[in-house]
Image (cartoon, rainbow, N blue to C red; front, side, top):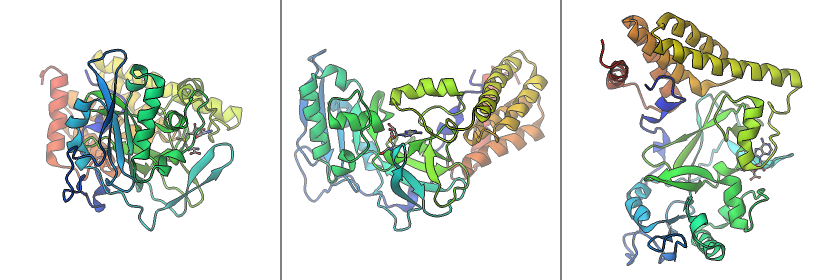
Amino acid sequence: MAFLTPHGSLHVYPFLKPGHWPIVPLVDSSKPTSYSPWTHAPICEVSAADPSKKYCVYTNSRHGRRGISLLAKPEVAADNTGLLDEYLNVTAPEDEPFKIVDIPGKGKGVVATRHIKRYDTIMLDYSVLLIDMAFAAEVPAEKGYKLLHRAVDGLSDPESVRNLGQSNGLAKDPIENVLRTNGFHTMLGDEQHMALYPVVSRINHACKPNAYTRFSPKSLQVVAISAVRDIQPGEEITISYITLGKTTPERHQALKLWSFTCACDLCTAPPSEIAASDARRSKIELLRDQAIDAFQAGKSYQALRLTRQILNLLPTEELFPMYAEQYENMARIYFVLRDKENAYKYAKLSLDTLVEQGYLDRVRPEYYERMWQKFFQEEGGRF
Ligand SMILES: C[S@@+](CC[C@H](N)C(=O)[O-])C[C@H]1O[C@@H](n2cnc3c(N)ncnc32)[C@H](O)[C@@H]1O
C-alpha cells in the first residue's frame, strides 16, 4: 500500500527546466584515448576485504566547467558512462541571482542578489566527484587518500573542491574533510555513492528552508535548487539537509551526522516559537498516521477530515514540498468514495503543484490515467 509515502510521488516524473543550458558530449572525440571516455588513465586499488574487487579513479577533465571524477568499481563506471553524457554544460549565467558571502557563525553561505520568485530555479549544479560509499572501508587509508587526491587533481578546476568548507572534526585528510562536510548521498546504478556539488555545497542548512533540491531521475548527479517561496534580495538561501517537518529534538539528532550546531532562524527563535512549531509538526505527524489508519480501515470520511487538517497546518510550517502528496491523498480518498469530480479536482491540484515546483513540464492526460491506475491497483482492483 503506497498511501502517504513521504514525497514518493515527486520522483516518478521527468526532471525539468534546465534545458536552456546546452548539452555537450562527454568526450572530445577528436582526441580518442585507449581509456575513452576518460581523459586520464584510470588508477586502481584492490579491496582489502575482497581481492576480487577494486576501486578506480576515472576522470574526464574536459567535461563541463570543472571536469568530473568517479571513484568507483570498474563495472559501475562502465555502466554509467551513458548517464554522464546527460550532464549539462553548467556555465555560470551572467545574471545569477545569488552570491557567495561570509555568514556569521556558519562560514560561507549563499545570499540572494535580487528578488527570486517562488518555484524559480536559483541554480543548477552537477557533481564533480562521485565516490563509492564502500570504498573508504575497503581500501587502506593511505592508498585510499592517494585515489581521492588523484580524483581531485585530475579535475580542470580542482580548487572548486579544495576550497570548499572543511568543518568536520573527524576527518584526517583535507579532501576527506571536504567530503564529510559537503557530500550528498546519491545512487549510481544500484550502488550508494557520495556526490560533491561545488556550488550547491555553499548553501547552508535551515530547518524552515526557503529553497529545495531537485535531482534529475535521469541523471541523479544533476541538481537544481529552486525557491520554496519568494526570496528577497539580501536574504540567505537555505535548503534542508534532512527530511522536512521534524521536531527540534528529531532535527538535532538527524543533524549529528553533519556535526554542527544548527544556528538557523527556527533553532535560534525564542523558546515559545520553537515550542509552537514543534507542537504543529508533531500534530502533522500524528495526523498523517491517523489518516493512514483511517483510510486503511475503510473510514474514508475520517481520512478526508484528517488530511484537510494536515493541509491547513502545512503553510504555517512552510512545508510546501508536502502539498502535492497530500492533494494526491485527497484524490485517492475521493476516488475510493467514487466522487469523480473531487477526485479529479485534487488530482489536478497535485499535478499542477508538481508543475509549479518543477517536477513536471506540463500536465499530460496520461498522468491522470496513471494516477487512477495506481489507486485502482492499490485497492486490489476492487472498483
Ligand atoms: C555544505 S557546507 C555549507 C557551506 C559552508 N558554510 C561553507 O563555508 O562552505 C556545511 C557546513 O556549513 C555550516 N553550516 C551549514 N548550515 C548551518 C547552520 N544552519 N548552522 C550552523 N552552521 C551551518 C556547518 O559548518 C556545516 O558543516
